[in-house]
Image 1 (tube, rainbow, N blue to C red):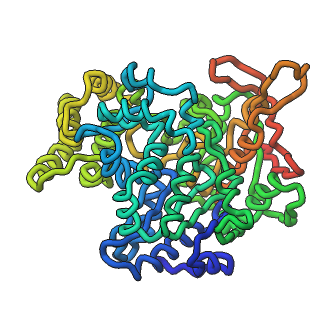
Image 2: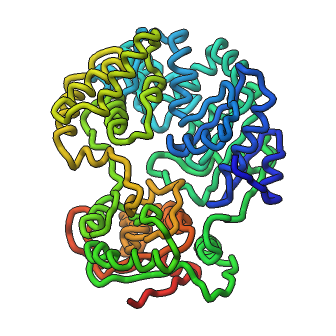
Image 3: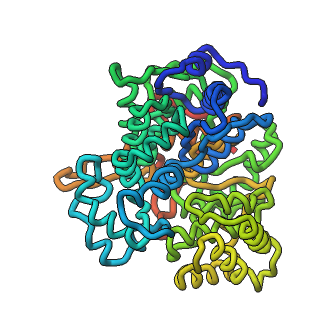
Length: 542
């Protein structure tokens, strides 16, 4: 493991052995802190024991796991993954059938994919308003879905909490297997994730939550920072630690970002201001054209050695596409999955198999070991591994049949006709397939601000900073022309996240006009967040 010398704040968090909550600023080294805490604990465990490490994305989970396993460190029987992965693999799949009748083979599905008769059994209470107290209202729906071998993705947390509460075998297993639970990005926790975390704590697992309320940006998914903040108050049962120093970003970037949040945060005088601003004459297409010369020039100024360390971040995907279409430099546009109509489980599986074709770093073993995968004999595993690797080497004309064959082995049954049909469409469309390819090693990254969460780049171009875009406006009845910003706090957090992705420099981007999601040309008035609290960027005049 690379040498890590913790700061005083980091060392205090690492040494604490009790239930705790860590509020960590961007770039404050939380992954290093977590990996140190985990390795210190695991070294004293028995072979059958481990820890639970929950991250918001698979990428973040892989990074934490890699840090923890550095230098061949034995993590024993630990779990690394997302909250849904944990709930499905360790709770729902092995223990739910003890409480609710369900077939031997089950799979996940979105609400829109469930049979009409199952959906009709939903209560009047919206599923996003489900709680421990009203879970009984949802039991007819859950029983109907599970009876058909379908786990509703939107209800995974609800089912997991129900199983833990009512299955002694599940509780005994969790206590015997795991001694501690760590959850990162806790500000993005939902209700049931929070309840499960508290339940694991009550069972005797040491509970560690890490997050930052100023990086809460998923309110649209009914996730916010109130669960994190509840752990920080006196009497919560959690020791509170703050890690406040941003070791990643240039000091001028850090000061600028913190001034946005706090009008009293001091900005140190500097002759080397690294937050810049450029207003381009035109719309997003003109921004793309301007970046053709700006990116190489600023890469030289800030000694950025690879274009892959440069990112263009947008509020909306249509802006990212417009800029990408007019950027002549090598670039990679991060987009949504090309699968829209296939059942969710199949779409995810097809995507992973196709990514295996394009990325030599991925392994067949990771797919064979995915949550909910059928148990296979040694010879079956070998056959399935060969089937998956064939997807990497087969002819384009054989790709659909080869992927279907591999998916059948992974699922234990043939994919649906709808899924197979969309797979054919995706495999026949180079633009859709492109979305599943890994970025080249020297390409500018273009993505939305939400997708940039957890990432870092040497040089960031923060676009879409328009009035009506970030923040958006609402016009409730009776407001009589009053300007009301919609989700202003979330938009400010999103702006903060965008700026703090930058290490060496951040360029705020506006233009005199903008093209909206419907293709109409609008006035490009600057966002109200520009210049907030006197956080002023240095204009680029060329």
